[in-house]
Length: 246
Image 1 (cartoon, rainbow, N blue to C red):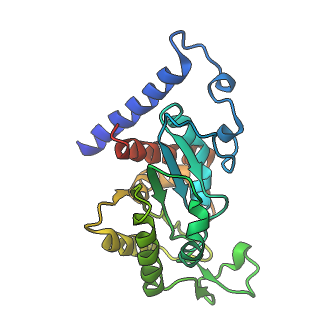
Image 2 (spheres, helix red, strand yellow):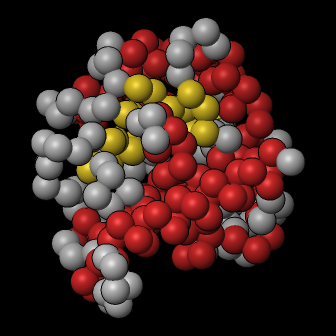
């Protein structure tokens, strides 16, 4: 029943977005709907509109993949920014968080670290990113990850923004540097950290699992197809709208 209601709400979100952007005649082309480079390039942030809330997306390449689609879904409802690069691992995030946040006042911060942290790397590996879950070293042990995320959450709480923790998406079978199930372990750590702190959770892991074989790239790639990122964006936009009280 819950999944049925969520499907209805996602559909309603998409329909409302279409109505708001197309106008009464419904004849607008995509180019007319989404003018501006922010609707084609993830790292081009929108011009601030003081009448709309500001949203910041923090994350690795998965978040880069769904950024543009989230902006399209929230067009006219929120100005959606993202950090100026890949969020990488939690140690990197903790060290550079102030720079990532900049001086903009955000109403909502949607954040994730995880896939880099649970990755095993070996300098001698020829696989992209030196991934090697057999002979490599774990980027951040669960203990190190917990400590880093505690520091990140404490800093984010000081911003006064509404916080949404986004679960790390699933690790597929045959991934060269990551082990099946580790995503759940690392997600659980953050869930323990944020318990009682008035931080929402975007259950993106479970959302992705529902269509993992359809939307995730093949051969053990943690990334997603274009349709896959659009699917993830629906959930992200939905959680952001909830956070805004819509």
